[in-house]
Image 1 (cartoon, rainbow, N blue to C red):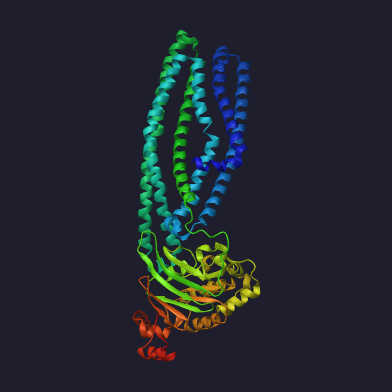
Image 2 (image 1 turned 30 degrees about the horizontal axis):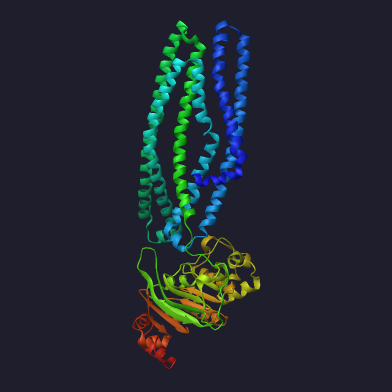
Amino acid sequence: MFRLAKYLKEFKLNVTVGPVCKFTEAVFELIVPLVMAEIIDVGIKNGDTDYIRKHGITLIILAVCGLTFALICQYMASVASQGVGTRLRDDLYKHINTLSYKELDKLGTAALVTRISNDVNQVQTAVAMLIRLVVRAPFLVIGATVMAFTISARLSLIFLGAMAAIVAIMYPIMRVTVKLFKKQQRSLDGISRITRENLSGVRVVRAFSRQEHETERFEETAEEYRKFAVKAGRINALLNPAIFVAVNVAYLLIVWLGGGFADTGIDGMTQGKVIALVNYMTQISLALVVVANLVTIFTKAAASAARINEIFDMKPSVVGAMTSPKQDENAPAIEFDNVSFSYVGGENSLENITFSLGRGETLGIIGGTGSGKSTLVNLLCRFYDCDSGAVKINGADVRDYPTEELRRLVGIVPQKTELLSGTLRDNMILGRTDISDDRIQKALETAQAKDFTDDLDGGLDARILQGGKNLSGGQKQRLTIARAVAQDPEILILDDSSSALDYATDANLRKALKTLPITCVIVSQRANSIRHADKIIVLDDGEAVGIGTHAQLLKNCEVYHEICLTQYTEEELLEQENENGMEGGAV
């Protein structure tokens, strides 16, 4: 919690003026019982209406002044808390965007959303309470006790006894509820995760009629959250009644003993002073209830601050270099040198991968589900760093490139199509803002998307809904391909990004890509999409079981031959095998 205190530096005036105003309000509040005592002991006792009227006006003035200072404090607290929340949320979001895939995989999207929203709100509330009540509540307790001692030292012992009893009640209750609040915050992550999954995958859920099942999943998680909340609420509900029992006992003792003292004149006690003592006891009890609630608020905020700091403490495992590396014009465009990689806590997803690809050539990557195809291109883009070996572009290790330069060199069309809400133009210039409309049109033509984008209402200014929900799957894929082509990269990666295209469109796309001066990497389940590639890598359980041309692999790679048999007849394969004269064997 203290680590986040730096966000208060910008609001020093609010943090200073706010508590001072609240302190002043508390001083006025402590004066009120004394004025009331004077009205009872002098004005009412003597029937002096002028005295009562004057002191009544004094009470009104005290109330107005107290309200004014309270409103100023409230304003200061609101400005500071909202400002801290905004800046904390901005910094948190900015830091999350610096993290690599490895850290994001570890945290999970749902947890990140909860922390940037709910947890920041908890800290924001704590800042407001810090300014508004942290000074006021303790001062009222101490001030009321001191004022009680000035009235009667003997009866003030009741105050000390009542406070000791209240603290004894609060401590065990707060100790238990603190743990429950922490568990409650963690269960909130689960609710966020399931909610996000169901909202983003609503079409899948309904397509398989899984609404009832997903509702049950949500209810189970929500029930867990409810149990923690109810249990904490039940225990916390004991707080106020227990405190008021102690306070009412103190009231009884004050009135009983104070009345006796007033009758006998002990300590100069009067009826007005007894009423003043009762008022001070009321102030103390209310202030202690506020303290109890503050403990709850700051406990939640401390748990949330720890979760926020956990993100700030995470350092990106992938950090770009500061200077550009020296590139070798004669080196291959892409080179994998004995590369192995595994995700956190898992077995190797890639093992001992070695190959190279010349500039302007096309590489095809094929293999079964989970064979490591997407992992390989992720290493090329340096979304992850390999565990051993080296991935090189133009003769330089990808780890030696500044991140921005590497992103300019390598354009990727991910397996999952993602379009952002906005215009078509906004999506096309996502990576570079200096892209002209002419270049966008050429990219759309290359991606075989011009036939439908020309018909969109508004052309390049046509609205795209979040996730491209107003487009078909094939249209979205073509737009993501156009977006990558428009960046003018040296290396273009298509990660199974033509799966929704028909064969004719796919063939036209590959033909158009051949005219571009780029090195192309195509990941596909379709043998037809990669059969004309200069080099094909066949992956099986993370290992490269075959590297060569289509004809070479048909002859020498059993895994590739089996894949092709699922898509072609034996006669077609024999024809393809003989197309290139069966040059050499697979590497």
